[in-house]
Structures are given as structure tokens and as C-alpha cells.
Image 1 (cartoon, rainbow, N blue to C red):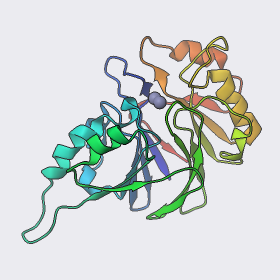
Image 2: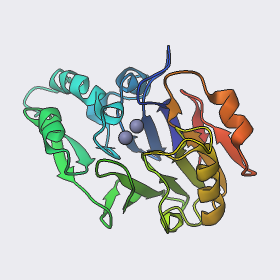
Image 3: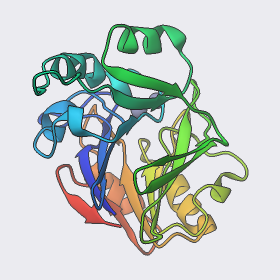
Image 4: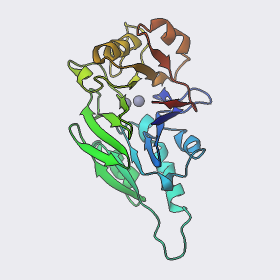
Length: 242
Ligand SMILES: [Zn+2]
Ligand SMILES: [Zn+2]
């Protein structure tokens, strides 16, 4: 399984950056996870969205879904052979906030499905198991198992909560929201030390820190806070082998 980071920022991007977006490849299976601002352009360096097997959103905050509004036009203008129907791309999201979901999907070429914690789906060779996270809107963490058994867990946006290590337990890779840097920062996201504690408690092999703050460049500060042996701050447009 390969993870390409299309965007690593939130709640808005750094200059030249993009918000949450992750392109997953496993053999011929191609899935986009989250689609914040700036993600569509970078996705199209790899694949036209009409050819994705599915899009899965962790939640419906704008830094995770805003480029779907623009993707609608690309799906409308997709090339099809004569007599062929335009393809509707499967889209998996939480059910709320309903108004946001309705605005994204009404009249768009998405085949819409809502998913919640406890649900499991298969997309091509990838198995998704959803876990409810702790964030102001319903948010699905996701445990993704590839064809060779490798496991990637993505937290979406979340603060820490008791028992949260069950989701990423034993995963090969933990892609974790570390929007906050210092331990003094608490709120709807994890700080770096909390993300590291999650990686330790879950016994994951590698921690990938993401959702870097958009307001100023926190990368060097984040690196100083890391206290997990195998942790990296993800880079945009880099492809990681899971
Ligand atoms: Zn976010
Ligand atoms: Zn959020």
C-alpha cells in the first residue's frame, strides 16, 4: 500500500500548501481520503477523480472537503465514450452536518454513502474499518488494511479520548492529527506529545504526523516535541510505502 500526502495543513493551508488529502494506492485500487483546499490539483498529478475507486472523508469540516465542490466540475466534464454514462464516484462520509453534505452532493456525480464508527467496507483490495473519534462534528477514524495485510490507521481530526488506542492497535502506520504543538494547547486536536503517546500505547511501527497548523510554520517546533522512536512529519507530494 502506498500513501501519497497531497496536503498536510489545517484548518487552512500554508503558502504553497494544501489542506488534508491523502492518495492511497494498493495494486490497481485507488482511493482519495479527504479533499481539502488544494487537493484536487495535486490528485490530478496522479489520477483524474473520475477514475478513483472511491473517496472517503473523515469528516465534513471544510479543510477536509472543500475541493469536492470544485471536483464536481471535473466529474461533470469527464471524458466518456459514445453511449457510455458518466461515472459516479463512490463517496463515503459521516451523515452530519447534513447541510454541508447536501451542498456537496446535490446534483453531483457522486454515489453517496454515509458511514459511522463500527461500519466496515471493502473498496477494491482495501478494507476499511471505521472508528468514532472525538471532534466537534462526527468524525470517522479509519483502519485501512491492504492486500498484503499492511495496516494504516488515519485519525482524521480528533482530541485524545480514553481507549482510543484500540483503533490503531498494532498498525504498521499511524497517520495522526498533530495540529497542536505544545502540551499547553488542548482542544479539538491532538498535540504532538498526545499523538506520540497514542503511537506508543497502540504499539504502531511508524507514526506519521500531519494536519500541521496553517497560521505559521510549526515543523521545527513539532520535531522538538516528538518522543516516539519512529516518527516523521509528513511532507506534501511525498509517496510513503506502508
Ligand atoms: Zn482539520
Ligand atoms: Zn476538523
